[in-house]
Length: 347
Image (tube, rainbow, N blue to C red):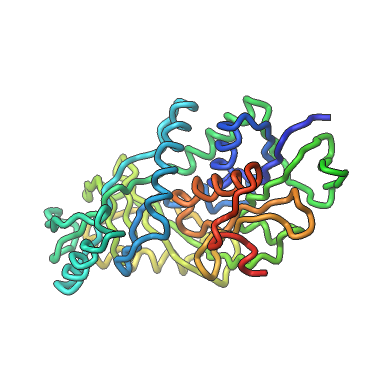
């Protein structure tokens, strides 16, 4: 019988962040993951403290960045890898009116640290941006595939990973402990993403799910070292490769790429990128989205040592460290969860 403090189900951004909190507090754990959920690993990985469609502040951007930056730096150091890339994000303006809205927004206290007041002029002949760009500060890109793949290897090397489906009906409750096959634990945290829909303990939480699809294109003439946000994002990956995305589909809940989404992304890309490009990859995943755009974190109403960590939506890179820290302090220190993320708000 193996005894651990926690079983963590899932190995995406939420799970990794929670595991790092456990490690920092000397808690033992084992992670179950069968790689069935793709939203974290296929994510574009941008972290951006501004909602660029409306020029408004991301919820708790300051608090999230304060936790995310040191956490990812620590993982890079511990695993001897690089996955966090500081990257300017340039918002393409389509009119003088958009420029004016940008500069008005930059005067607001919540946005002032993140919106540059210097108009960036376009000097790339293959980018159509007659009205220039606004630059987002304190932004970047996480190579989520590199992070998740290497973190899984790290867990395997430390005998803390089980690459198999977690069978929920094998849970046995005994006094203050939980038995699962040959493991005895105190707590189970479910960080399953959209896979929580198959979890009998938390399947009723109001997780909507939004499918996103991303293209990777090769554009040798483009030569940009910054991300562009227009009708779609264009994100440089190196070697003349760029991610283009993403789509939003609230009906399709599969991880299968579609021709319809591919054509949508190509059409939008051609509205502002004028050089030739070649599609080299096309991926899809279902994001764990919630109608009020806030995470779903909390304790089961009946089984007091079962918890959920979910609903990170489109901003998992920034949100994951914040909600992981909140959940740990809720469990171990009996501190109240932020009301905006507590699943009890839907009770």
